[in-house]
Length: 117
Image (cartoon, rainbow, N blue to C red):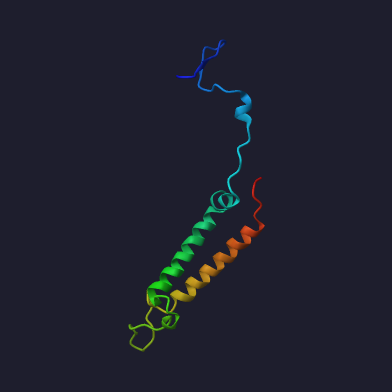
């Protein structure tokens, strides 16, 4: 090994050629946002991204961001109502409720989060 040192007592080869104080140096913690998202709340961040993706994807697919078309569709059921499924009336309120709930929970967790210094 290049730079390897030989211990005189045990005959073992070491690949570390610095002082012991180099090993004891404290590593700077990552940015607080990285600490929160990656280290502290990765499961909530996954749900946060998934809920926002579901909501914005469904709103765009159903309405093309024209909110006047939110509950209207060219495909009506036999009684004139909006059918269930991707064009159904339930996707918007359920996705909105999920997105708002997750956003409030993640926001509350972020407010009380204390990052490492």
